[in-house]
Image (cartoon, rainbow, N blue to C red):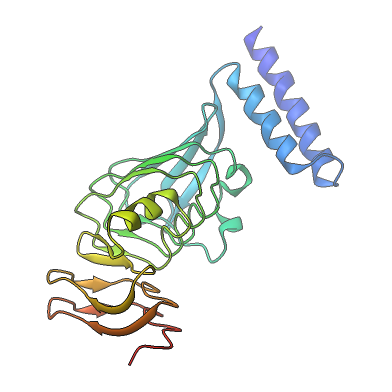
Length: 231
C-alpha cells in the first residue's frame, strides 16, 4: 500500500512539475507540494552531486527541510546561486549539515537561502567561498572551526549572525581573518594577530586612516574599494 501511495505521489508530482514548467503553477507551490508529499513518510525530497569533481560530494534534502552534504573533497563553485543543484528548494532549507570529509564550501553555495537558521561545519573544511551565505537573512547560528583559514568576500553579508558580531565589535574577525569592518569610521587600527583581510572587508567605509600590523600577509579583492576619505 505504501509503495502505491508513493508511486501515485510521484506521478502527481511529475504532472505538477510539467504544469509548473509551462507557467500555470508557481514554482513555490510546486516546492511546497513536494515537501508535503515527502513529509508524510519522512522521505528524501531530492538528491544529487555537488562536488568539484562531480561525484566526490553528494547532497540530500530531507522532508524535515535539512540539507546534508556528504563525501570527500572540495565542493563545486557556482558563478550564480541559481546554478547550485538545490537552488529549486533554497527558500525551504531550514538546516544544513556538512559532514566530515568535505573540505570546502563553494562560492554562492547557499546564497539566498532565506529560511536557513543554522549550519554545522566540520573541522575538515578549510575554506568558505565568496557569497557562500550571502543574504541568508534568517541565519543566526553558525560555528566555524579553527580549520577554516580562508573566507571569501561577502560570505556572511546580510545575515543576522554578522550583524550580531558587528554589535560586539565593528571589526569582525574569524580565525585571524578580518571578514568585515564595514561599520568602521575614522582612524582604524587592525589588531596584531590578524593574518588576512577578507575581500570587500572595508568596502565603502568612511575611513580616514588605517594601521595594518605585520601579521597580515594577504589583503583580499576590493578590501578598500570606495573608501573615498582614506588618506
